[in-house]
Image 1 (cartoon, rainbow, N blue to C red):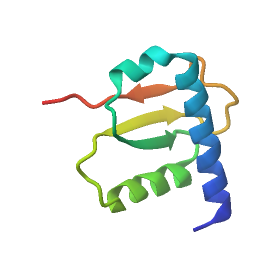
Image 2: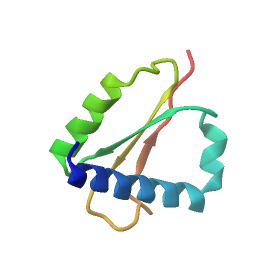
Image 3: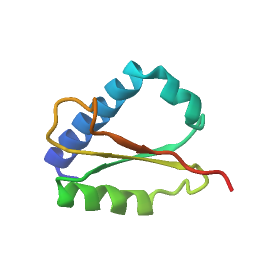
Image 4: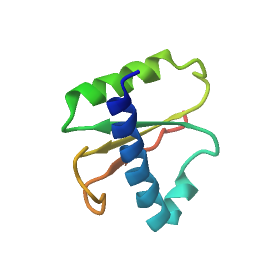
Length: 88
């Protein structure tokens, strides 16, 4: 795995973590156990990599939480889009 991809993904997860920590009420809407997928809308290569990684994951039973962000932004205050699964 490319070290740069790992670093970019870690940076994005850190952004999402800060976003959630500033809004703890978001946790009320998330399942206890889930797979997180961060899709950077301004980095097609990383976005596709993360989608491919999701498809390869073995634990298909857990719901998927998708967060769409801009990869190069410093803060998610008004730009994060969090998609929470709908139980059917």
